[in-house]
Image: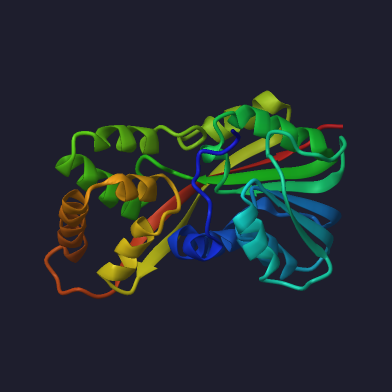
Length: 267
């Protein structure tokens, strides 16, 4: 299996993480500095946020979004009728295209959910043409996404079994400083550089904060779904107190930082 992310409902994913993927896509593309090109591959496209952000920019003839989740690919297809865009189901660790097929290869918020992440990076390198840009970004899982730390720390404080959830969340591959750089260098990319990109996750109220965890998409939602009703209510109450943080319910804004890497495919 080339993904550890439960991915069954495109609408639920949009509420859970897609809205923040859209927000991160723009600074990520600014960082990637793509020179333009005929063909771009978006590996792990999810519901299409990066692909659609890319097509709002000029200089690209065709962008192909690839994702292992049929539900997400179907959702992405419903977001655009641009003839320059194609979405299809595929495995990041076994991309179907020949060597040197793309002028740029990108990945946003995917590699840290791939158990064999080096294999996915190697595939990105394989399908990139000489001189092509290859860039990726993943959340800084240990300390960069405040809302996720609120969730896993509260869960672990209430339920010792949630220590495993927190440990897995904080130690995912590619999520710590330098890990993306090391992976890019190991794959043979040149002129490798890494940066931190920060956006804000804005919530209308506590229900807006809680509902993604009750929506069945991703590891944290898997944990919530497995709880008995009393334990789920206890977790919800604990998270509500953490969210309120001494003030009435309402809008909150939390920082979310991702690590990003950029490299050039060698000749």
